[in-house]
View: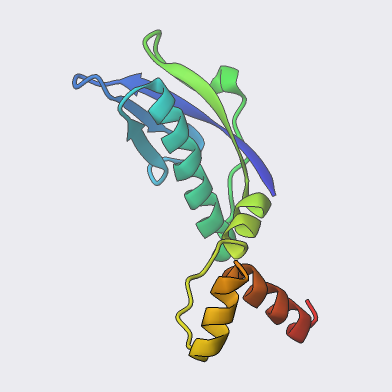
Length: 131
């Protein structure tokens, strides 16, 4: 599901950028070493918060109108968009390392044939499991 919440970016005394989500306070917050890092961290924090909320069926507030979100002149309001469906698909498709044993002669033949063992195993499992 796609979500869009506004984040409040505030430069702190250490030069870092603190990020809060006014609609989700006090639970969703992070920081970055600079604006680019803060943007990345904001998306990551929001994604984690929303995935957890979905997993536990936690009701989420409607995003506020950005004109109604209080902020000072030194703060930036930045829209942060997250698609939890894509995040879940990415997690399901990540590679998982498996340790397995095969006969030495098959290993030798596979190396000689310049075989990609991971791709071959993946294809064989898909075929065997018909997925």
